[in-house]
Every structure is written in C-alpha cells, then in structure tokens.
Length: 365
Image (cartoon, helix red, strand yellow):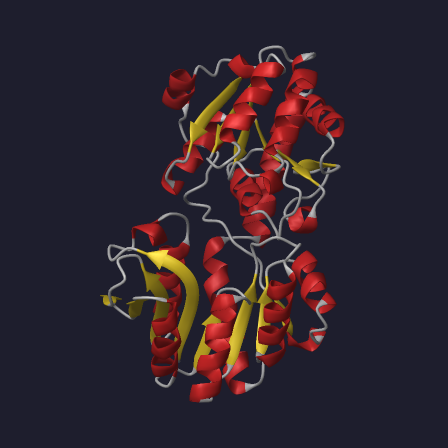
C-alpha cells in the first residue's frame, strides 16, 4: 500500500524540523510497514526538494499553492491520503482526494479545543468529506462529534512514547549540578503561552514553598510569555526558585525528566498530553490540570494527580501531597512506567495506523 501524508509545516531540506520529536522516526517506522510512504510538506527555502530514505519519500513544496498541485499529482500514485490536521492540511487532502478519487483520512489531535469560526467551518467540512477520522483521545472524539460528524467515522488511536528513550535509569547528576538542583524539583515542558497555564504554576510556587522551602521549578521551553513569567516570579519572591532553561532538543528531554521529582502540566486545554506519557515512562509521577484528554493520559491517584485548571491553590495542594510522601511518589513512578508500557508504547502505534489505513482503503476493519 502506498500512502500520502500531508502536513502544513515549514521544513528545511535537511529535515531538521522533523528530527525534533517523533515525526521522522514515526514516518520511517510507517514506511517499513508500507510499500511506499510519501510525506508532503512546505519547503522553508521555497524550492522543491525530494529526500528519499528507503521506502520513505519526503516531498518539500515551494508554497501553499504548489502544495495543492503536488498533492493531487502524488495522490494519483497512492492508495490513501492522510491529513495531519483537519484545517489547511485537511483541505489540501480533500481537494487532492477529489481530484484523484482517492480516499482521505483526517487526523485530529494536538490542538486547542477552542477554534475560530473559520477553523470550525473548515474542520467540519474536511471531516465530513473524509472516509475516516483518527482521533488521539476520547476528549477529541467528543469534540469532533460536536461538529456534527457521524461517530461511525471516528477511530481512536492514541499517541505513543518511546520507552527506550524515556527510562527511569537515566543519569541526570551532571544536569542537576549544572542547574543547581539540590532539593525537590518540579518540571514543566512545553511552550510559554497563555493556553499552557504556566503562570498558574508559578503562582502556586510560593504556596508549595511554605512546606517545601527548597523546591525548584524548572521550565523547559520558550514563548511570548517568558518576560511576563519572569516578572511574575520576581514579584512573588520566587525568581531564585525558577530556572528558565529555554527551548531544548527533544533528545535532551529524557535527561530533564530524570532530573525532576514531579512533572507538572497546568494547561487549560489538551488533546492528550504526550509530555505526560514521557514523564510517566521516565518513572515520574505527574500533576496535571483536569482539562481535555489529560484524564486519559494518567491514572488519577495511581500514576498522578489532577487539579482544577487555573487554580493555583488546588495545584499546590496536589504537589504538596506528593512531596510530603516520598514513598507515594516512588510507588506512583513505578505504576506510571507500567501504565505507559501497557497502553502507550511507541512501536505499537504504526501497526494500529496501518490497520486503520487498510480499513480506509478497503472499507473493512
């Protein structure tokens, strides 16, 4: 089977953007199970490029307009078109599917639950025109169904995490020494934007320090709110307890996971929360907001705790409960690793997706 994946993403000819996270690894793994895996992206240098790696073909198109043309031409050589989101990529896939008379599968995951009216119109249109829709959580399932999309089109295939990459036995002593982490450590990994709720986490820090004065908060990631967050930490008197690391390569994230005691995820909305899976795979308990699909990414009271989104007092109480009971944290860490291994192991994802692709092409599971 030959499959065309379409994503609206700017990529350099060396594919460096795909090497951050699981994208390139994911596309290569899929290619090993397919006759050909074609991936269409937008070129950062506005030129056409083709990068071939065994059965994986990465096509870089100069601009959005040429992506429509390239998608239609490539689709005619494939059995199925897969859009990585229901909006622009979904529209390109829908047009290519109409032109080539090929079935389209839309993937809906990893974006805000509140969308603009135009996004709602576009997402609903592409989903209604598609053969099947892959969602990565029950929360996203309910969202897409609320658009008026028939539920018999929906298929749940969750995100996955590489257990060989995220492990409890990683030595982070050098990193802890470099960052000055000598006491309890909280970790946040993600963008510094309003929707991620990082300010709520910083406002909870003085409350946490009442019972754990030596606690440090490490923020891995960057974004437009960094200056504001630094000011908030300064005004609250906890600036010396917050370490702003900035953006780092995904390959370094396992070391940060190993250096922390608890991962905190205060987002106001989340489709699932892959970082929660990565932390649990690393044997770390998690504290997350009760938002969107986060409830599916952990077992409350077993691998982590949930708090009310936007409530620093509730967040602080959950963190303090864990810090006050090291044995509970250890038990949760062990259960967290087991939970992810049973439900979210990376290498199972490709097999599930290929079965879904065959269903879309052949019309049967």
